[in-house]
Structure formats: structure tokens, C-alpha cells
Image 1 (cartoon, rainbow, N blue to C red):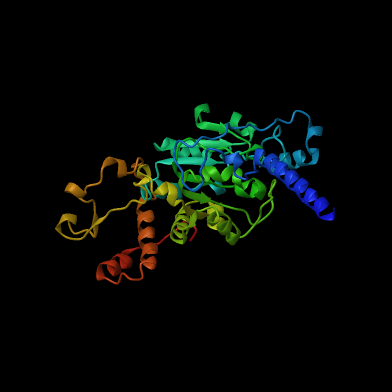
Image 2 (image 1 turned 60 degrees about the horizontal axis):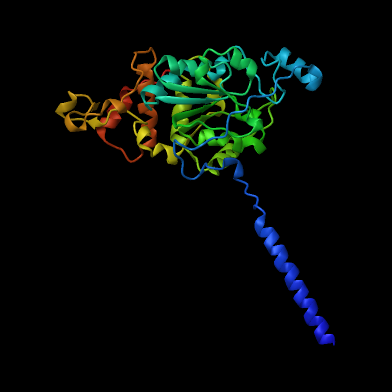
Length: 354
């Protein structure tokens, strides 16, 4: 009788377990990547489907937000009085986040032709690239900033990163991420990371001190680990070059303090971004007319798609090229030729910063 009772009990348990397995099997398993459904983070394509952009919810009554913070925003000179307090706001004209020589080097020497500006504010930086024939897109969460933008409406995406992920439907040469990252809590990084992953190069700054809604204040290492953990590669060479170029002109203190440049191989390898990282390629010989480097000719002549879209002469051109050659000379330890030594001897480095 005891054996029969045990067998019956085991049989009943098996039936219940089987029923539970059927119930569990019918339930959709939680996927942490569900917010990126249809978007494969390891292999990008320009036709990846993004969720719709979600504007911020305006603050109509100060009681709905932190009135003290709104008063601090006003005293500190930040815009966005009708924006939720988690938005970083914007300033009328932050010259420390602008640099003509750096931008000129990016467009002429790196051959940057397209830029997505993340946290673009009123679009001052974005409009600089636009005026020099670059294709641009401005992503901003502050409705107040969007209504005062220098850019036409069709080049602006109003999206609050705190409300979900969004990314463009095409790839860009550069993601310009300046005075932005410190304003976004780490739990929301994956909401803006897809934008960076749609770019071949990422130029990003961060803050070492407090400010309006500065919730992620860290050193260089923290951001390197975060970004490289997402598949981006920190470039020491491009970072040094970019910071040095910013030193050739006024302002640009944010770049001198914390600018970091990352490479995104998944996008940079695409055919539409093969023009990136320019410069003259043919070296020496009669074809160069006595110069060390010159444009290649014949079958090796570069097609127009590989040439810069900004060619107007600027007051920084000579110093940009001299400084780049000097810095590259320090990178190229294996190059000991007399030609290189001669170039270095003629190079003059006179920066605006001294």
C-alpha cells in the first residue's frame, strides 16, 4: 500500500511539473535587448529600424518640478526654463565647446563629411559643419533649445534620452558628443549609445566637476571602459591630435580638458566611410616636384568621393598641417629617414595657447 501511495504521489508531481513547464514555455522570456528589437548591436546597417523619437514632457507648473533647481538654472545662465530638470539645458553661446581649428582639421585632414550632434543645444556647432557643406543632424532633448535653434527644423530630432532609445536611419562619419555625457545617468547610456554606434568616429567630452545636472562626473578611464565595453575603440593618436588642434585657436577648453576620440570599426569599414582619414599619399620623386608628399596621379588619383567637401582656405591651414606632421613624427618611431628629419626641422609649432 505504501509503495502504491508513493507511486501515485510521484505520478501527480510529474503531472504538475509538466503543466508548469507548459505554462512557462508559453511565457515570453525577458530579453534585456528588447528595447533594441530589430537593431543588432554587433552588426550595424543603415536600415536598422529605430523606435520613434520621444520629446520631453514640458513643465507647465514649477510645482511639477524642483523649483529650486529651476531657480539655479536661471542664475547659472542655462536655458530650458520649461524643460524637466533632468535635461542639461543649454547656454546661449559656449565658446569652450567650439574650435575652428579642430573642426577645420576634422573636415580637411580627416575628411569628415557628415556629423550627428548629440545634445546639440541650439545647434551652434552643428551649423558650423553645415555651412561648410557637411551633412548634419542635430539631436536635442530640450524643447526650449529646439525652438531657438540655428538649424532648420528638418535637421533636428527632438528626443529625450531619459524616455527611451533612438538612433538615426543612416550612418555618419562623426558623432559629436560635447557637453552631454555628464548630464545622462549611466542607466540611460544604452538609450544614446545606438546613435554613437551609427557613427564611424566618436568625439566625446566629459566633465571633471559639478554643473547643471552633472550626474556622471568621472575621469578618462571610466569613459574608456564604458565605451570600449560597447565595442568602440579608444584612439590615443586621434585624441592627441584633436586636443592639439583645439589648442591652435581661442576657446575650446572642453577639448583640451577631456576630449576623447573613439573608432567604431563596424561603421568605419562600410564603403560610404572609406574616405575618412585623408592626407596626401604619394611621396617623393619627380612626380612630387621636389615636395615630400603630393597628390597621386593617373590610376592612383583619388576620386572626388575621397576628397574634402570643405576646401576654403583658412588662417589655420598652415599651422594645422605643421602641427599634425610634428605629432605624427612622434608616433612614427620606426621612421628614421632624412626626409622626415628635414620636415621636423622646418616644422614650427606656435599655438594660440602658447
